[in-house]
Amino acid sequence: MTERDPLLADGDLPLELRLQQNVDRPHDARSTTDAAGTRRYEDVAYARLAGFRPLLLDLSIPASDAPVPLVVYLHGGAFLWGTHRGTLFGVGDALVDAGIAVATVQYRLGGESLFPAALHDAHAAIRWLRHFAGELGLDADRVGVMGESSGGQLAAFLGLDLDDPALSGRVGVVDGDTSVQAVVGWYAVTDATLFADPRFPATPPPGDQWPDGIVAPGAPVDALAIVRWASPAHHPLSNAAPALYIHGDSDTEVPSEHSRQLVGRLLAAGREAELMLVPGAGHVFAGADPTPVVARTVAFFADRLGASVMPTTAVGERS
Image (cartoon, rainbow, N blue to C red; front, side, top):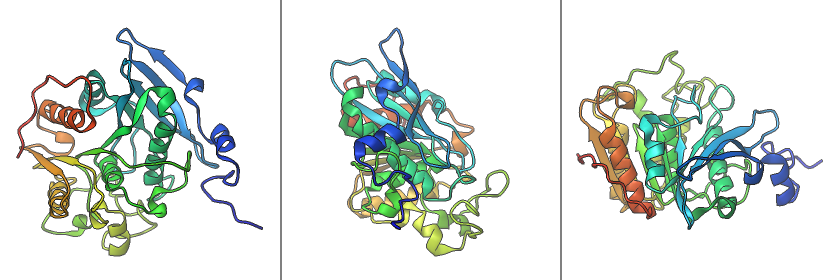
């Protein structure tokens, strides 16, 4: 008996039939249009896996006569919590105001499936968005990704454009391009081995569950082979997209060394990378005004993705 792909109960079916069963189509999803002409889709199932809840995304598309660029937003939460509802500090609305569509993506958490399940889901969301780009009015050639904390870890992986089926998975729309043209990481986890480095002490999330039990059952932080595999900084960087990493220099949960080291490695590999440190800011930019962070993020995406409406807000200083 032929063993089926565990991620797709109907993995042997033709693509169109798989789509009918495994994902929502845009015309079947709930949508509204506001006074500014922005179309908003809620709870679109970009994938359905046997034995799991549907994986959902929300999507906001600014009014435009031409296809618009897209940013995929991945929430944080240490792979323990989080939702696809909204974005931090209003960055999603700011991107839409700049003429950029925003998709906020739900993914499986550590209590449901271990790494790389969440990364498989992030790839699946991009494949869904690209597959239906024409119907949605999105430009499939201008896609960016951003994430915060653990979502930043996923965004960093997507930005590397790795040709590794073990990391991209076969969830939802199983065929398609998942490369991105720009990456922004906010206090991103880029190298989980740093959590075992006494030079960069970190306060773990509530419950002290990360990364133990998230990467692999009972895996301690010093299980280097596993932890390195789950760390974007330890993968090839030769195809990395232009990236901006923003980090509070007083972050005690995910030390800023995560962003410092990855940006340094990207630059050493000849890739385009920028670092913005926020003075005095802790995790989630606690203790600092996030306005310059949002402005810098929107300006970066507007420049790299060619937004039709350039942002007018002030851009934060580079450090």
